[in-house]
Each structure stands twice: as structure tokens, then as C-alpha cells.
Length: 215
Ligand code: ADP
Ligand code: FDM
Ligand code: MG
Image (cartoon, rainbow, N blue to C red; front, side, top):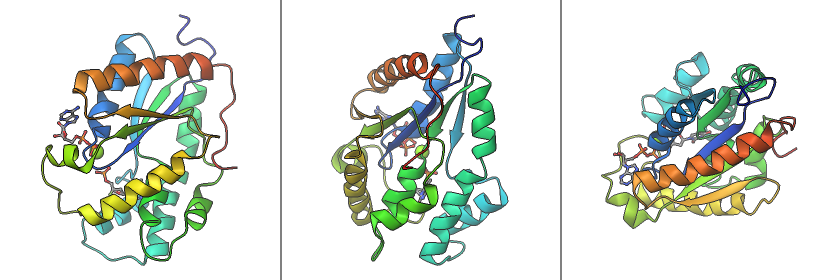
């Protein structure tokens, strides 16, 4: 079938503020791509099931405190430990739909005092480069209609505002294929927009090697 034979899959990342709809849309996209005959799988970061992931998970749940630089490196290590798997899947023709990636890592840590964007990017330099980064764009007002913040670390409106600004700075980087989608639309409309972008990039990425992020 033209959708699989001999071609690599695409690396698609979903980013955006808390409650923008990343996890919902990641699931729906995988399902829709599979229904169209593509090979597709979901992935998320942090991936809390590994040893490193458990450290990060316990930090987010405020069950442990980890020094800020250290936890930044652990989030990055959690991505690096999945790189062999990511490469294998892409090579075998599977398109990966990833719920958060290095952009979350940089946006969140650089929102803390005394962390530059530059420093925060370094540990993730050289990761597999996404073929498409969808930014689910939503105002804090619209997001607040979707329920209250949870109780995990970072889930305060002050911090989230800083994170939004950092995302905006990251989106100025034209070496990446950022696509902004209005996340205040209905789930269906958001889904259709992401699906269209994804199908186009799967076709385009098939014949290109996987790039290196920020390298
Ligand atoms: P994220 O992973 O970005 O934090 P979720 O996918 O978990 O966001 O969605 C947060 C909440 O908002 C969930 O209750 C979800 O059902 C709801 N939601 C997601 N997308 C929409 C949408 N387009 N319109 C209204 N509610 C939505
Ligand atoms: N987060 C996520 C980081 O601080 N750094 C990272 O590298 C990544 C991938 O973890 F607050 C933060 C962002 C968010 C939390 O929440 C993960 P979800 O609900 O599992 O996406
Ligand atoms: Mg989520």
C-alpha cells in the first residue's frame, strides 16, 4: 500500500497551554490516521513509566523536590532515552504523534527565575526534529472554561502566562515547521485542522531524512 511501503513515518508534535486539548487531539489524530490506513502511534512526554519518568512524575505531583537544573536535565533525559525507539518506529514507517516534546521542556524551565532560553535548549539539541509542531492556541480565559487547574506543579495562572510567552519566543524559530491551530474551536474543527496538516506532512516527510533539532 502506498501509505506504508518503504517510507519513513512523520514525527508530529502537539504543544500548547494546559487544557488546550493536546491529549484529546493526540488520541483522535492517531485513531483517524489509522482509519485512513496509515501506521500511527501515540507517545507523550514526560513518559512517566521509566525510572527517569518516575522521578519526574513524583516531582510534578510534588511528592519530591528536585533542584531546577537537575529536573530540567531529567525531562530531557526522558526524551533521549526514547530516541532509539523513536528512530526505529519512524524508520519502520510509523508516524508518531507526540503529546509535548522539547518545546515544553524549554518553555517551562525558562519560565523559572534565572533560566535563559539558550541554556534550556542545549540538552535537547540533536533530538529527532519534528516534521510538524502544532501549537494549540488558546487564551487563558477560554482554557479556564474547561475546568480548574489541577494540583500538579506549574498549574497556576501566573506561571502559565510566563510559559505562553516562552512558547511565543520558540515559535519565532523559522527552522521549525510550526503551525498554529485555534484551539478554542470545537473538538471536531480542531481535529480536522490537525488531520489535514498531518496528512500533508506525512506525504512530504516520506522521502526526507529525519532532521536534528536545534542543531
Ligand atoms: P491538554 O492535554 O492540552 O491539557 P486535554 O486534551 O486534556 O488538554 O483537554 C482538557 C479538557 O478540555 C478536557 O476536559 C477535554 O475534554 C476538554 N476539551 C478539549 N478540547 C476541547 C474543545 N475543543 N472544546 C471544548 N473542550 C475541550
Ligand atoms: N513539562 C513537560 C516540563 O516541565 N518539562 C518537560 O520537558 C515536559 C515534557 O510537565 F506541566 C511539564 C509541563 C506540564 C507537565 O503535564 C506535564 P501533562 O499534563 O502530563 O502534559
Ligand atoms: Mg494533556
